[in-house]
Image (cartoon, rainbow, N blue to C red; front, side, top):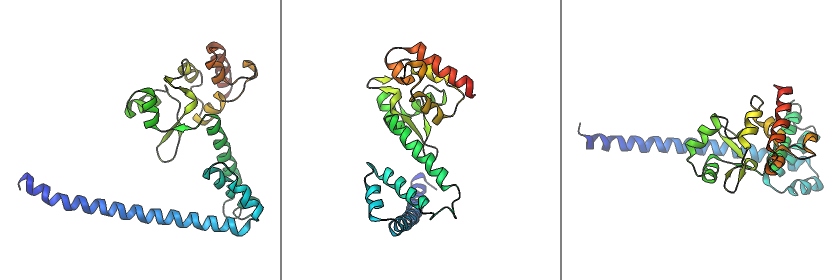
Length: 212
C-alpha cells in the first residue's frame, strides 16, 4: 500500500477515535454536572435564606462551594454517607487559606513564562527541588506565586527549599508563609525578601529537623 493510500485509510480511523473521545468527555461532563446539580439542590433545600446569602458572600465560587458543603455538614446531611466529610472539609478550607496566603497558584505555563524558560524546564526544576510545587488535581502541580518576583525566582529561595527538604509540599508552604518568633514575627519569605537569608534559612531548618 502506498503511503498516500495508508494516510487515506488512517484518517477516518483517527477521526473516529477523536469522535469517540469527544463523546466520552461529553458523557463524563454530564455526569459531573448531574452530581453537582444534585448537591446544589440539597444545599438549597436544607438551608435558610440567611445561610444561602452567607454562602454567596464568599469572594469566589470555590469559597461559596466550601460554605455550601459546610452547611450540609452542620445540618447532618452527609455525615451518615461520608463519615470523614467534616475532616475533609476542614482540610480543604485550610488549603484554601494557605493558597490565599501564598498569593495563589501558577500553572506550569505561567511559571515558565515568569521564569523565561520552557514548561519542560519547569518540570525538571520541580523534580530537582529547585521550585516549590503542590499537588493540584490529576498529576498536575501548582506553583505558589509567593516564591516568585516580577523577574523570576525570589533570590535565596532555593536555600529555603534545601533547608526544608523532606517535609510534604503543603507543610512546606505553610511553614514558609507562617510567622515565626525567631524572625521577629515575620514569615520566612518576608525575612528572605528583607535580605535576612541566613536567619530565614536557620528558622526553617530548625523546624524541618524537628519534623523529619
